[in-house]
Length: 217
Picture: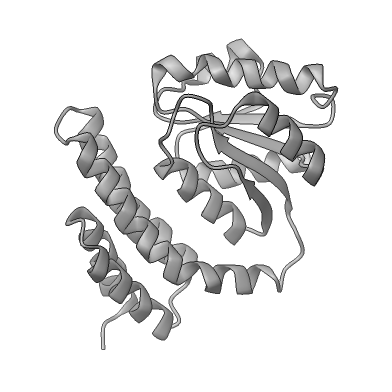
């Protein structure tokens, strides 16, 4: 029988090899061995995806490879997600979050990892998906009484949409009660400060800690 360390490494390797069936099988093994699903995602699946993401950023991998790694990760998350949600139901809600990739951007790998990690930490997450216009962020925030809105942008040309969406929240009278956190490959701490966002993170683990601090502040 495989150890926890071996299973997590197999998850990472399977993502690096874009092997969807293998990822699903190993994720099922992780469930059978009662391995912490959050650990399996962060130390196994998402590490594999981040490795491909780093290669892509360095010009050493193609966009298609980044997408395939994301699909492999999703296959594992689909297996592990019910366990995460089951454990979430046994815990008090940490906070309410609306999250999405901004208008004009269809990348969801990082956003999906953050959403799953937030759910694992007890947050109620309203995931709007990709290519989200400003009014959708506004409507979902009103609907859920969210405390935090998270906006992702992978492309430099779509980062201005984060500012536009923030202005929409302001116009709707929501900014006084809602904090905004931004992230994504194209986002920097300087940009977050420039547009007045309360938070910035470049990885899922730090994002969860950031959101906890924002809820508590």
